[in-house]
Image: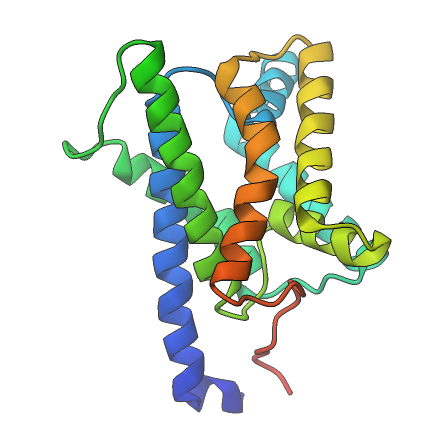
Length: 212
């Protein structure tokens, strides 16, 4: 438990919280752009409709399965950030979407611009919270773990995962819009660029643990 007495740990915890808040801002910007859901959201939405379970329940269930898969198959250890990503991003999104400063796009061009801005903010948020060295969220950890496992760039693995999820969601009858395609094609390059610019390690496993 010595980690709890480590000042650097709490500095990283603060960085993690800022990153997760910005993650909520990013998703909110994309939702209010009204040009389509990101691939994972489209996937969770159609599964929610078909199963009768809530969107949040489907998102958390698949998040948990991805964590287990990444841990067992890709050796990506979950950390505090993995859990907090699942638990706090949703409430942050709900909070941000009630704020008067959050813009709501009307029309295709403003929507595209706002959606691209949301992707940019998500890239920054990813670099901040992953750089806290407390682990990575389920989907980020999956893409990074695949990158390390197969020796391909993060850009390639993140795009591959997003495009695969998009195709599955479309096959199941999910809501696929322009934003869904934009996210699938751009999130990988943006995430890789952001991590590189912020000098964040490509290893998503946590460096800090509460138990030695």
